[in-house]
Image (tube, rainbow, N blue to C red):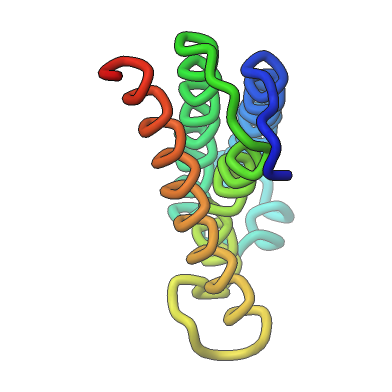
Length: 150
């Protein structure tokens, strides 16, 4: 976990995760078409879904997929050997950071650390995901800066 892995392996993991996030976001986008269909049964079945929050999650997962791809590009461009925890942190953050928006679409406010176990767990995971993204990017930028500026 704390031993360096080569840039190509780390980049492959990040690119795969980012591609999977694009796929998931595309499926979510298909689900978001429901309010635009003229089907009373579907409209009634999804009445409790906040599609505006779902749109936020959809866009966030796309942006986080690009974030993972940019991290992979940085690894290749600087041939960085980083530890596995950095890759894991960026992948975890890339998936979990949008979950509060997703859950909010279904009535769980994961932006507030209150309420029941599900809400508190979701809020905690959201906070950890932010910390993971910042920690991962800090290591990447610091490693690239050391190579660039000596």
